[in-house]
Image (cartoon, one colour):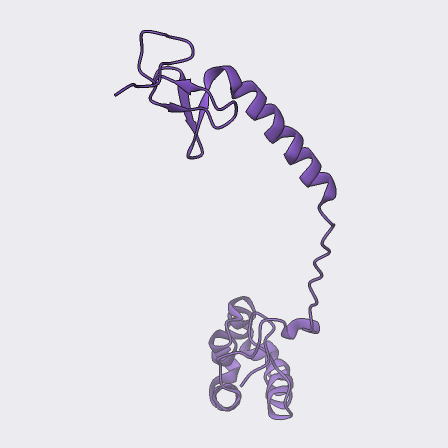
Length: 146
């Protein structure tokens, strides 16, 4: 039985064929490149062809325009608040002068202001109560109350 000899080393038995030039080579002369065996002499040629193909592919690739449409409007972009309008109204009516309803809605800064000023001397509590009663009001993130 006769074996193929390496094209570079006549004393060595060929381990495979170069997929680029088709010549037999020993295991020291072959390099595996993406599952294909290529001789070391043809590596530059393989890379050069791959580079040309990549440049050609890139230049032939169509431009894809991606458009993101935002259908949200105003401060309601984050959806509806998990806080209850009824709870906020009841808190405002019974303990609004110390700002509990504002703390409940996450508005800590104005809650502290209401606490130390008696609900802005009563005027702020009345405004908050009427706003909540007639469908207005939002939480600290600007989301409408549920």
